[in-house]
Length: 355
Image 1 (tube, rainbow, N blue to C red):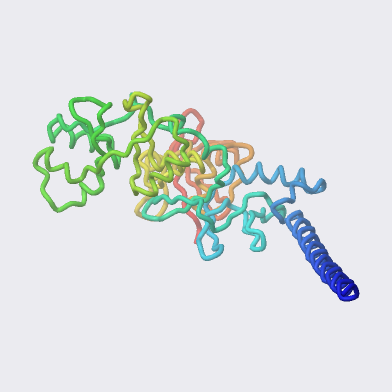
Image 2 (cartoon, rainbow, N blue to C red):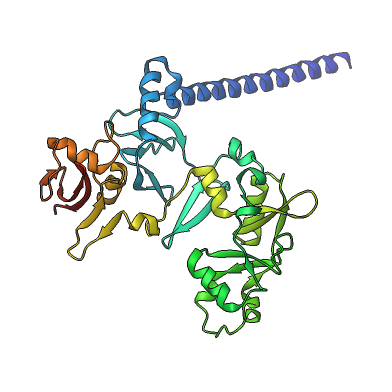
């Protein structure tokens, strides 16, 4: 009996030792794998290159440079189209941005994950990926809302003529709807796009009611991460923000949140932009001298330097330090003709790209 117990104990120790030995091998493999991955991401083109002393200064300079570049380059990554800064590429191994000129990697990475919102600009759908730990996503609605005093609302107490003129003048796509001038009682949101494309005849304010959706309201101290979730869940682009007494504090739109997370996205057909850049019938462009060089780069897909001056008028002037109407300049596949000069400054240029 004793002999049998000794055998069992020895067997138990043997099995236990084998298990411990196996776990030790696994831990060693994992440790080696983690170390290998740490070295990979710290390579010159990796997302953690900035952590390596010999790369740090170079990466910091590249980050400053990239932040000034227009975001106009389309690339494919994991089955989707990304728009990334000019002069960069995606490191396919780690998903981070790499500066094409220097080869330095920066810690801006892309991955397919649920932390994504989308927005349409000029009939194109753009996806914006954000980090759920980003400090901006933890701001509250009150910090990014349009305050009550600046909210433009449609008042159903007004005549249809007044409402129509208001919509034509302001050109918003959505309006909070009120009655008797009371912004504390927002009864819904009017979608102007649906109204414009209807075949039904609008003869009175009552006819507007079928285009008004119920207003969704949230407290002003709600984190914008939660506001975003509500917007996505309800497919409503405008949310009413209320104060502690239930009155209207302001409104927040999907665009407000997108701009908070990613920066403002300008619509290329925005009226203010069109007044500075006009396309002519011959395919050339009439460009205001105040237009930023980066915008010209984005429009013509060129890389004019913008370290010394910011505007295209100043840049062309610096070629020969003169401003004469009719002067022609050929720069980086672009032809510039000076069309207007005021007080020795180039005000208008005709620009086209050589084919």
